[in-house]
Length: 348
Image (cartoon, rainbow, N blue to C red; front, side, top):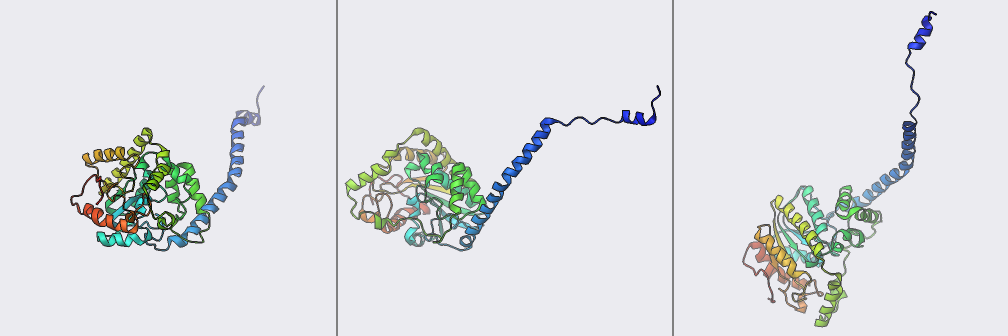
């Protein structure tokens, strides 16, 4: 039977395939997911905007090193800094209570102190150094006041980002800093920083530290020193696995500094513990090997100030007089390259 032209066209026309059920369900799923994520994403954008606005007033100001515990507020842009300090509160004390001006006067050079109080370990220092270089800065010398314990546990490192209530208290919010806290402190560290940044800062950039001179006994008896040693340090333990891990991260710090043509000087800072600082022997041996490889210069000054009460605010932080004395008799000749005892076992 002949087929008419109209019927032939219908037969020749390609038939559309039935809709793919799996693909259609996937498109519906994406649509629903988008609707569910839209509100949280919008809220996140608003929160980031709020945190950024909250930080603008403080970021626009200039602060002296002793006026804030924040490293971000002190971070220069495209500057040359002769000497950088890193460490924990023992390093930060070189700037607190306007010790900074005294130290600069003795050293006759400008310094920037990026030590982190509250037990800032290797990872916080590594993060600050990376931030320093990423903002186009340069330095000649880095002095790292290396507490012996920061190589022996996450509480000085990753956990510091998420558990230390003072760690972010003075820090303003920036997206780049948020990403770095996640990089070095994990999601928990980033969340803690973001949470802290959302809180209004009525008091601005209060230093966030206690005046040791006002909160510690003036008489530092041997019993007091031993009690502090047990309370602060020996209860934490000294795991070898942690030491291997964080000593490698310290090498990363030194490597980054050397890649930017900075010399590194590692100093074990003075305490009243008479050389009993936990982890001291292993830390000094590690630094000795690094110096043999030409990576840094080290000095064990843990016993250099003896147990002179006038030189210490408490068992392991120097007083203003101690800072000035140490800077004049140790730090200045070290920076000048003069001969200084590598491992002092007696007082001045």
